[in-house]
Structure formats: structure tokens, C-alpha cells
Image (cartoon, rainbow, N blue to C red; front, side):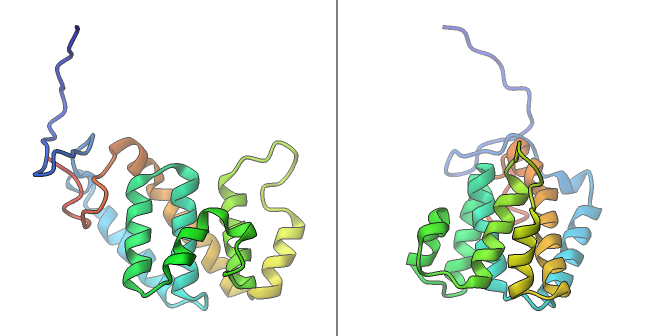
Length: 173
């Protein structure tokens, strides 16, 4: 049996789970201010926070991030979202519990994050469906929300912060 020595500086927490990398905000403290500013701006838009949270969960499912999935699920539960709706996000296309605007937002998340070898990811038809439910401000809010999530996708997939721990305590040193 061959073993290799771990050269990272991270250590296991009480539960034995560890991140791959230490907290990046020590190296790039501006990230906290950037993320906080974007979150604050996006909270004031016309799209309900519940819709954005459902998008975050679907995005986590699509990118395969346990960290983002646990955080999104915890946030939805804390906001009082029904368990059946949380569970149904993975199969939203056939689930009867989502509104038209929520469906359009979930479809947008999938379109942006799923390669389409046959044309535009966000088709004119999808944009037309979005426009039936959201004005320009709402479409920009959905778009920028996806951008904010996408900014931190590589951080979650490469650094693997510990799921279920709050920001600032989700990396092991």
C-alpha cells in the first residue's frame, strides 16, 4: 500500500471533515466586501428572495456542489419554504408546485449552466418566457444573481469548503 503525504495546511475539524484549501479571504480580503455588496444590491430587486434561493439550489445541483446545496437548502428551510418544494427543485419541470415565474427562473439557471451544442444557451423562446414574468429589472436581477453564484462556483469545487458551516468557519486551517 502506498501512501502520500498531504502538503496542504488544512486540518480536520471536530467532525473530521476538512476543506482542501484554507479560507481564501485571508489572501483576498476584498472578496468579502465584493460578495456583501453584490448580495445587498440583489436583495433590493423585484424578484422574490424565495425564487433566488430556489435558483441557488438548482445551480448547486447542476454544478455538483454539496457546499452550495447544503447552504441553499438550509436557507430555504430557515425562510420557511415547504419541504416538498425544496425536494422538487431537482425535478422542477414536472413538479406542479412551482409558479410560472419560478419555472422561468429555474429554466434560466439550467440554460446558463448547461452547455447546448445546438445553439444559444438562452434561446429567444426562453427570453420571451422570462419576459412574460419579469421586467428588465427582474431579468437583470436573475442574470446578476447567476453571475454572483458563478463567481464562487470554482471556489466551492476546488477549495471544497466544509458543507453546513457558516462563512468564516467553513474552511479548516
